[in-house]
Length: 460
Image (cartoon, rainbow, N blue to C red):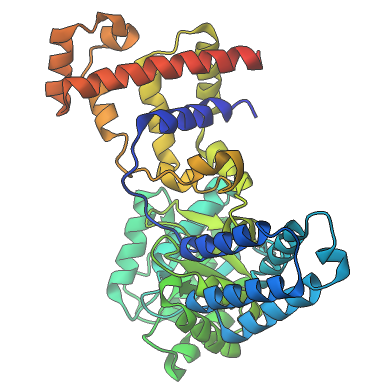
């Protein structure tokens, strides 16, 4: 994938050399992942494995899962299935028994997380997606995120439908999100009845040729008859293809219990888990598919509208065990990379004409993909890439670098040799940095340019 290489290689090259190791928001699963990796490191350290070793590892796994707020029955079934498969002569006498056990654990984690990635089943036009959940779970923002995902990934024309008549601000919030992100929202024109709103919106979507209508329903602080009755009538009026329960990952097993309650009243087709970028322990994600019997289809990975990802159980299992998720990393880079610009960068690297202006453009591309620490977190935490995967990088790591480059004249960006002492002082003053920091930028740039020139020659 030539369009990916220049950006990804520059990103990693810069992270190696810049020494920015202060802060990174810890995503869901990090604490549990670290615990599991320690357990398996000890297991790999054993010369040979016995039932005792497996049982001791399973005890620690059980404790780690319970502390991560995973459903008790899910934990019992999970560890029992692993023991059944791991304790046997075929595994314990194999050439690499620890690796065999890790493979069994990965396969079981994938099963618990849902098995396979479950795509949306959009069968008609317009297809209707009904979002349901408790108040505060993030339904309205998720509606906009899902609309943007369908628009950018599948070129669908999407109509957002504000069917939360209980909370006046919800309608305005949805309209604002739509306007800010180039989406369309239905205007309820003050209609106070959510069912009437939904009927009118679906009718409009059909007449105007929309592919999908996403209905944002009202929530409550808890499940009650009035809420379920309203959602039931909205469902009958809209005949949805998908009914997705939106759950807050921060609430742990409460999210699972709420999903069960909604599932008992509605034919749910899947779950969207929000706020997975916070300090959620992962218990909801590891429990919800098994307990509710419905697949986890999407996860919200941040507050921005573009921060919604398809949930892949196998990739999540690999990340939990420190094996990385390079496929998702490649998809993120590919989605945000301008192919023509990337090819131009590759050509400049090959000809050794890569300038500070080009570096500034690469930083802009990099920022589109979110925090660098989050991207590097997709790399394996074992093996040769372990150091990169564990880098802690501030979210504003590039701000001072951008400020220094922006404080240069076009001539200085094209030819850094022009930067004498007085020019460096001017740049430092204009960017709020210091002359040593300007020198460090130039040193890193020249070093990276030299390394990338070599890499480009090798590819050639």
